[in-house]
Image (tube, rainbow, N blue to C red; front, side, top):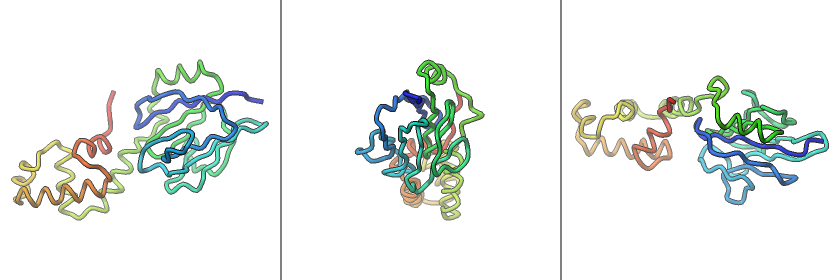
Length: 188
């Protein structure tokens, strides 16, 4: 029987922590009542459960809205092997049975195994914007101010501000910096 499971957790490619599964049942989700709370609107309140069994650690999706992926494929339920890669929204959880392996993984990054989730989601959400909102959004990604966008699109600053508020609402952010953090990939 495998006694330990360590999760090397990354959020949008940035390493956050190594989490040791200690309970027989560990719920993972956005809810503060989850054993492992991952705060992001793309993670369901009760997203995933990891259950200690005689055969190892069983990962079970709890009917999450955006689903869970295991090694790039949709997950319903599976026993986790060392180096398995779970994706929950913008979070990447890599499973290890040995703390030393998790520690080594936390110090390196294999970008070939990490999807650029932000780009995928941003492209999908962008399609739901009106054509004018898409043009304003594209200017935001280029780093232009509302005043510069108004001049470029021959619109009033007030109109651009109205579009900006609508874009922030659609992307579930409250500022341009949050929008850029969610939509522009980080390069290291």
